[in-house]
View 1: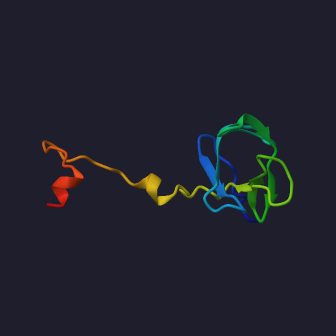
View 2: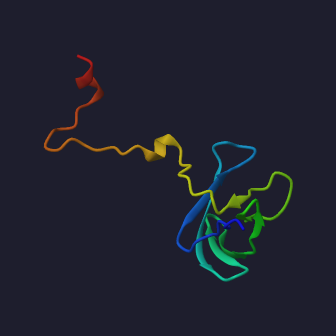
Length: 105
């Protein structure tokens, strides 16, 4: 018997929209029972969802079931943020901030 990948409390799961690659749906699992999970979805508050199993992975449809709906699986823990959100900008210590005019003499 195969093991089933299940949603875990405290983890954030995400997937991309089928229509727009830049649209990312995220949900954080707040609590779970044997048959339901309570999630926090950005822009939609918290809600209770009933996961189903597909190919040994729990799946949910946080916004309902319709054509091209978002499906989030328990194996979708990748960091899907765009590159520009992951960039860490650090200011130099003890140096004055230059201007564009300083860079081009």
